[in-house]
Length: 314
Ligand SMILES: Nc1ncnc2c1ncn2[C@@H]1O[C@H](COP(=O)(O)OP(=O)(O)OP(=O)(O)O)[C@@H](O)[C@H]1O
Ligand SMILES: [Mg+2]
Image 1: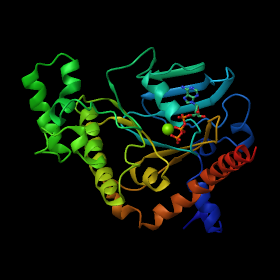
Image 2 (image 1 turned 90 degrees about the vertical axis):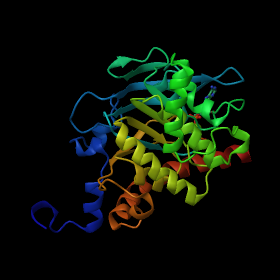
Image 3 (image 1 turned 60 degrees about the vertical axis):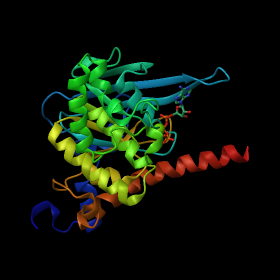
């Protein structure tokens, strides 16, 4: 060990290596928390980002007619081919962030850009795996997976051929004629994955896609996802409650604050690829990264938990 690192306590060293990227870009805390670019999650220099949110606010009207701010001055960039995860306490605004990127919801203020252009509606180059099951219950597996190409005008024969290929890739060969209610939760998630990836999206948005699965199935699917993603070159925004999952999968992890959500920190995950998510969790480096991000996330989870306790008591 040489120069700057020598004599640095291990903990301090680790914190510096994994500091949020805005900090590593030369900002200090007070600059980063300044009026304008609050905690901007800066990316490493490179090509133009695939996704860019600048000073984004999102307000909703509550059932009582009041305005509720879900997102506050949110700044986020995702690079071409980058796998990013978003973690934050429940109800903080993770799904809302994906809804804005997808064009399902407009921002109340600020700018959302994909592929260098403002988002004005739903883009066919964006695939979205929703938090809840979003397969068509009245279609069998083959027709569910073929739905995207069919909507895009491909004839049935060609669409089915592609769908069979994707069904094989997600390990569902033999289940083409099954309907969603005849599948397990894990199998339905595989259908949703194939249904999204068959369209070759350049951006894949995933909202807690594996949260309802048992640990073993989940690990298998995480590895499958990494294999499919690395072959696709797509940019991914993956929302999860599970920090271990976020680190195992990602190049970068964004931590959101308790609502209204803004970026609290953005952390590079410099674990080697290809990764086996079942094994990478046991690497000492994984643990180091986990501890630094968890320290950030824990504070926000506590804020959210205290709020929930107060509202129950009130
Ligand atoms: N259409 C809507 N109308 C009113 N409020 C909304 C709407 N959509 C979201 N919200 C509110 O915005 C906040 C953020 O919601 P969001 O679904 O983005 O949270 P989340 O981080 O995805 O939560 P979870 O982890 O539980 O999935 C919540 O307080 C929610 O009640
Ligand atoms: Mg959500």
